[in-house]
Image 1 (cartoon, rainbow, N blue to C red):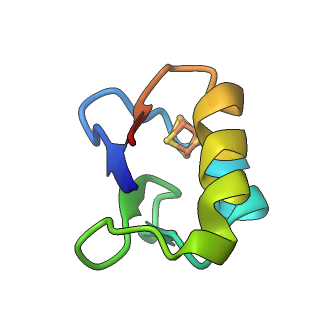
Image 2: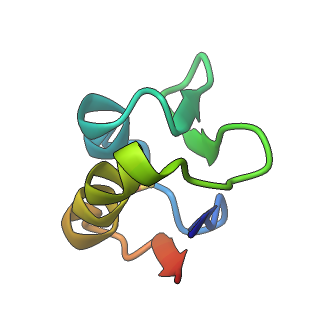
Length: 64
Ligand code: SF4
């Protein structure tokens, strides 16, 4: 699974970081980006989907 975060769409609500700090980096202004190469370990797949489902800006997509 790949975790893709479109930084152009992110408005910095930090919901994704709250759900999955393992997958998300946040800058000093609260804007998020995918951590590392975006590959999701199997044990974090549920959290990745939670992030995508709860981003109010639809900035996160998941590639299965
Ligand atoms: S939930 Fe969406 S808008 Fe909010 S910080 Fe994460 S990617 Fe950005």
